[in-house]
Length: 117
Image (cartoon, rainbow, N blue to C red; front, side, top):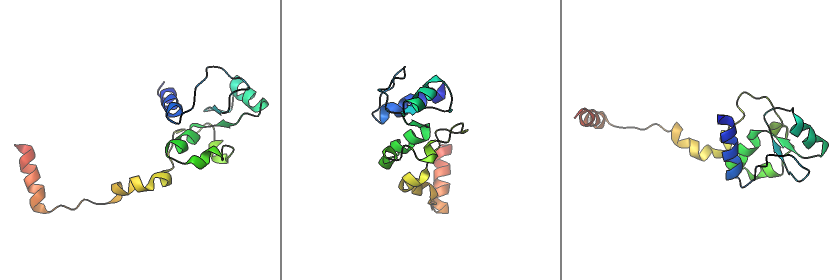
C-alpha cells in the first residue's frame, strides 16, 4: 500500500535499485520487520538489513548514513512510524515554521475585507 509506495519513492530518489528477489548480489535489504525469507537470507549472507529510517536520513542529506548502516537506529524494526524524520538534519528548513509572522492590526483588517469581497 502507501508505505510500499513511499519506500519505492525513497529508493528511487537516493539512486538505488529495487530487485524483486534476494541474491548475494544485493547490497542492502530494507524491511519493516526482522522476519521472512529475505531477512534470513540477508543475515546468512552478511548483507546489511536496515529500516526505512536509513533511507529517510539519506534523503535528508545525511550521507554519513552510508557508512553507519549497522547503526542501532537503523535496526529498530516494528516501529509504528518507519518513515520518521530526524528534524535535526533539516533544522534550517524547520526554522521558518518557528518564527512568528508579525502583522499590524490595519493589515489584518485590510486582508479580511479583501477576502470578504
